[in-house]
Length: 126
Length: 233
Length: 222
Image (cartoon, rainbow over all chains, first blue to last red; front, side):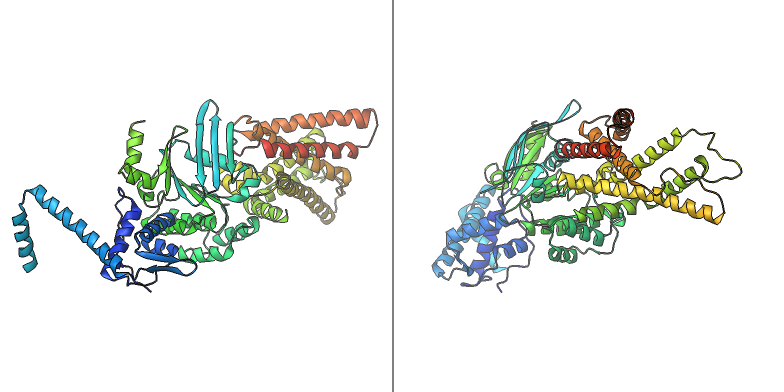
């Protein structure tokens, strides 16, 4: 049985909830909490676990399907993709997002590129 | 996608006052819809009119295509905002009553829900707290297998634990064949619960959209949108 | 149909048990002392004209019929009753059966208790006017119960005196009863065309059907 993080989801009501679920599941796939090829619970069980509306969960799942992160075989179930390329590209996408929002945040505060790199090195050494 | 409930140009007067003044909306199957508005907007009246407790003055209401009359009752399960069970009833009496009177009542599911919602079958409904009573009524409402569920203020004045259990029960009831209409003025509590919303004010529907659209396109939570719409009324 | 009746009866008895016993006791006392089945050395029967019998009888039947419709009077149970998928005539028949059985039982039990009391106290008893509930009297109970239910449905269907449909129902009851009395006099006594039972049945049936139609199309629990 795949493990979905036991942390309770706290949803931001101003952003689409299905997108927040997708982010959470993408992270699980990328970190390996949801192993490649692992079987996902039914949509209903998932919606129960995530404490959301069934329709919301279905939308999240179909979007993940479109991204290629999961594959559904009718009558059998949904499985995490085994394609390493997809998982890596998801990982890259997520890290790119984190990096660019960090950099633009720092730039807003007035840091130069050089100071940003120095700060990162300092923080990593701690 | 089939239309479960269709309300067209419904008006309802009490004396001279128009409590419902041309209400129009349609509910497709498989959705949880919130009927939101301040007290006195006509939410309870609209539900009572769908149930034929009040007769409408003009307009049509159709449930799964059938005009609302005694026949369409078999398609609806109604949870009013007060205790509608007979005063002398215990939970067990209510279970017997529902089993007898409603052929779509599933006693197995009822027992399951009693365990889930921690309901004591022997208790008398008159002595229950608000939260316990609401759980009993939810259990009875959702043990019936129907196409349209009408809930009037199911979460008002309920303790957080009961509220969580009730919301969970509502979620688990949803399937592609039926629709749940929840009437409430507590917008915040139902934020993550609803698929679509209808804002009702002074007997008219002033806004209707899906929760996803509100978040994606307007960038607001349902509560923010509600505030904005009602402030500009 | 029977399930509807079962629960109408259960609800009726659980709610009004004491009240019904009170009505029974009141009826017995009324029959003993006002109608004068008992002689206590003096009797009231010459003080009170026979009209009081009829008023009391009507009041009793009306009250019992109203109680049987109690689920329509309590607004809090309205959603529960409104949820039931049942043909209108079945709902009305159920209420009618409850009302008729109760009225009949009250008169019958009063009779028996008085007879026993007379036997025990070795009193000569006058046969009270409903005797052993012959056909005519049972049909009168049926008729007036139907009138009562019809009156209430009528009052609620046409939204008369919103605050107290019981008063409108009472007035309509009186009016319909008068109509019947006039018909009765014209057809049965005056022209002697047919026996009373022959107009009670169609009149009752007409009121019942009208009541069902009103209930289906116009009745509002509000």
